[in-house]
Amino acid sequence: QVYLRESGGGLVQAGGSLRLSCAGSRMILSTFVSKPMGWYRQSPGKERELVARIERGGTTNYADSVKGRFTISKENSKKTMYLQMNSLKPEDTAVYYCFHGDDWGQGTQVTVPS
Figure 1 (spheres, helix red, strand yellow):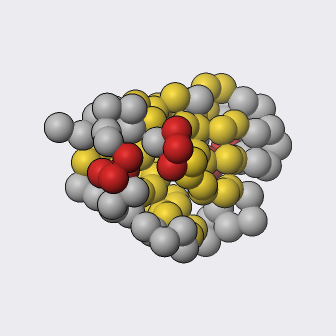
Figure 2: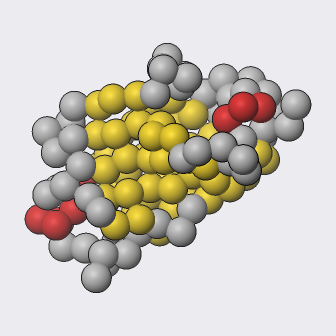
């Protein structure tokens, strides 16, 4: 069973930065690289939003709301995916979930006070 462990969330002031990590430490490498990965977020009262996605070949896609501020990447040798978040805004406050194919992590809270 795929196991994804997120880390890096927290409280940061507007304009600050955070880097989220999503580790697939229990996966074998071939499984880690076999499927698209990415990040969704959800805040109370709002629909879940796809934040960023990285395809098997490395192609990336971003929500319009985060383009130019967030960067998704992955380091296959470490079986870890990252989301670098810069210039954070209060509207970025949400629980961030990583996914690998159809599998999901438990989520990590990001809070940017207004």
